[in-house]
Each structure stands twice: as structure tokens, then as C-alpha cells.
Image 1 (cartoon, rainbow over the protein chains, first blue to last red):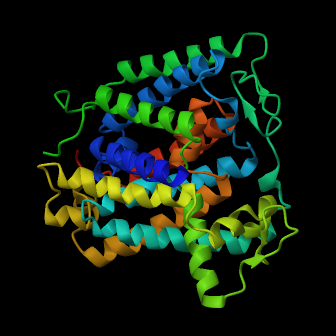
Image 2: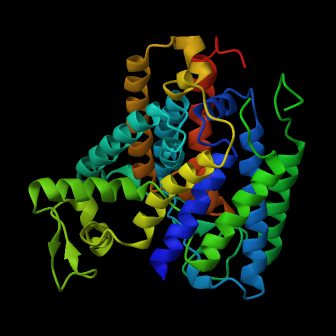
Amino acid sequence: MHILMAVILGALFGFVLHRIGAANPQNIINMLRLKDLHLMKVILFAIGFSCLFLFLGLHFGILPKTHIHVKTAYIGVIVGGLIFGAGFAIGGYCPGTSLVAIGSGRKDAIAFILGGLTGAFLFMLSYGYLKHTFLFTKIAGGKTTLANTGIAKYHALITNLPGVAVGSAIGIAFMIIAFLLPLSSDNPND
Amino acid sequence: MEERWNWLAGGLALGLTCLLAVYMIKPIGVSTQYVILDGIIWNAVSGDIVKKVPKAPKGYSSPNPYLNKSGGKYAKNIAKPANYGFIFVLSMILGGIISSLTMAWRPPASDRTAPPVWQKSFGREPVKRYIFTFIAGLLVLYGARLAGGCTSGHMISGMMQTSLSGYLFAAGVFGSGIPLAVILFKNGDK
């Protein structure tokens, strides 16, 4: 059952990433150059929409709390993000979209994936030396959210308002930003 | 001109897919599976990277500290690759192929080695593009593993749960990605 869901959900995710243009490195690079914000609007709206309904789903007991997985915040998240961003700008791919790009026959995506396997391998070799350094120092308690999920093992930063109100407000704010952001600086008819 | 869904339809589709994944199983993540594939290859070559240890928390252990962390969670997934996360990521390739085959637009042959924005700045030489995308992939996956997630796991899945780690990761990615893309591709036109 889990394996069947993996095939369906994985294929759906790949299909959607392809149809929004995320598997085309031109669109990623032009987003980062702030020349074509189509993909930025898509991502901001998707985050806002799913954030709103995730917190509503939790509040009304539709979404199982055991399905929530908050990742730890630590210094390495920021440092890793900075390293990731450099590769993201050079290549125009991320770990998922490079896989989807194989479907369009993009050969540079294969070079990216081989580089990715090498990068992940280098991290496996270096982890033993890094794990006791400042890179793994937790930030704000580690498994921390802005809005209260109502799950005891996750801390919330905003505790004086109900989680559903904070989560919904953040979700709506993201959707409003997605609407307000211009599509592109020099091609308004896209 | 590339066909892509308008940003609102695309944002809704992406948001619904991510919500469906959380509702059915758990939040979407991709970059861990590069580690799993590395581990499968490493274990096939050397044969002693993953061992069955009945008293280990997950039943498997590894001499590599990274594969052995969280009670040997990665070691177990390397030994049993037919698990949800790995099949999900492989299925993303299938989704990309289905989308590509059911779409009238195909990237022109020259786009499949390098996007036009790259060609305008760095020329059409394929080998040069492959070397740089290999390095890009290396940086992206090293960064993603240091950060504990990528665009899918931290940015979309993390930010929809209002995880602090997702916001920190996004700040890092765009903090380096935007200035670098602007500088690298300043001759890239639109």
C-alpha cells in the first residue's frame, strides 16, 4: 500500500514540477536573476495554500498529527542553504527537478545528478568530522515552528495566539505576496 | 515558447500535491535518497557498509557515522531500498516522462545541453556546461545534506508547517543564489 502510494504521489509530484516549468533550468536561473518570477509566484502560492489548509486540517482533526515532521533548526541549515544556493544558481536544478528533467531529455541534468551523488557521498565521508562542531548547534530549541502545531515535541515561537490562527495568517500572507509579485520585469504578458 | 501552467493553477496543483502527501503519508522530501543510492552503490562495491544487527534500533548499522545516525535509519533503507521514500523519488522521473510525452512542446536540442541564458553568458560548448552542472550538483547535494533537506523537504514541506528550519534554509538559498545568479548571468538577457 505504501509502495503504491509512493509511485502515485512521486509521479504526481514529478508531473506537477514538470508542468510548472520547474524542471527547466532557464526558469530557475531567471527566477534567481529576478527576471522571471513565474516560478517564485507558484512556490509562494503553493506554500501559502498548503500552510493554510495544513493548520485548518490539524485544527479540525482531519490531518493526522503523526504525519507532521518538523526538521531541526541548526547553524548548518543556514550554511548548507548558502552552499545549496550557489549550486542552484550555477546549475538551475535542485535535487528533485533534475530527476524530472530527465523526462525532457536534458543531458545537463544527468551531469547534475552525478555531481549530486558525489556531493552526498562527500557529505557522508565528512559528517563524522563535522558532527561535534558549531555547525550542528541548535537554533531556538531545534524542532521549532512559528505557529503552534499542538504537538508536544515541537516548540512554537508564537505561543500567545492559537496555532490555527497564526498558521492560517501566515498561509494567507504568502498567497497575497504571490498575487502581488510581478510576473517579470520585462515581459508582463507571460 | 515553453508551455507551462499559469502561476495560479500551478501553485494550486503544487500545494494540493504537497497537502495530499502529508495527508496520506508524510511531508515530501528528496535529497535523502541521493544518500540512499550512494549507500546502495557503496555497499555493492565494498559489501560491508551496511550490516544486519538485530539489537540496533532499526535492525541495521553501518561503520559510516552518517549512515548509522538516528539508530541506523539510513542503513536500513539502503538494505531495503523498496521503501516509500526511495520509490517516491524514482517515481518522480516517471512523472517527468509522462508530462513530457503528453505535452506538445519539447525543448529544442540545444536547450537540452544548456539553457539559453547559460549559452548567452558562457557559450554553447556542452562539456563546459556538463562540468559546471556536475559542480553545481555537488554543491547542491552537499549543502542539502548539511542542511538536512532541500527545496522539497525544507522549503516547501518545512515552510508549510511553519518550521523555523525551512525559513532559515530558504534565507540561505536565496541569500547566495540571487546575488550569484545576477552576477554570473549579467549578460544573459531575459
